[in-house]
Image 1 (cartoon, rainbow, N blue to C red):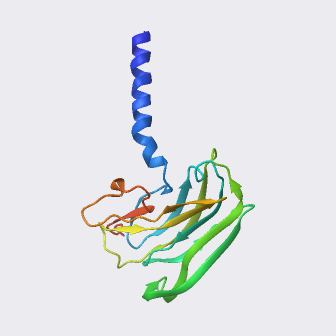
Image 2: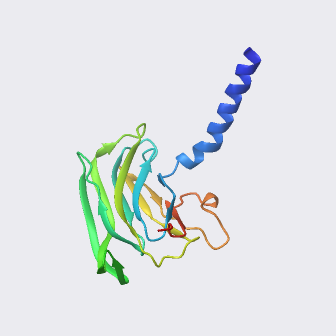
Image 3: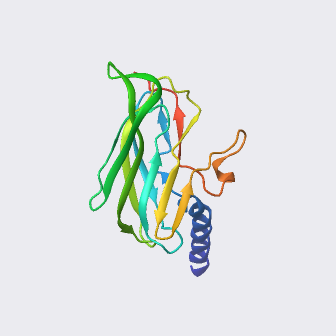
Length: 177
């Protein structure tokens, strides 16, 4: 019986070792979505900067993710930067030429030993190409330090090859109607 428990414990430790590097970065909770659909982006923040608490989280909204609305967070100040898109998009029978391009939450601090999520919604433009990836460069600011989750892999490389990969969303073909 104890040998069986030992194997289970070893298996769980190995699984945690494999899974923990992915959780060490700021990531999107759902990393795949169909082109043309609404998408709820949930940025997962698993730690601060070293031992310092996270005081600010900034995310750049990629071209093609339109009509973005961030969710307020109790105790945190929400700010957005609105700018023109590279082109005009059609969504909900309207022409959209500008929108939220950057979101920042600043607050009292998220201690290094705690986890939290930051949320925003939008629409994936219907003319985005399936089987491509959108990147959401994110900067985490702490007292006297920062983590810059902004790296985008070069062609033929993977986010796993990077030290500080930007949260990313893999685009799927449009859902059947």
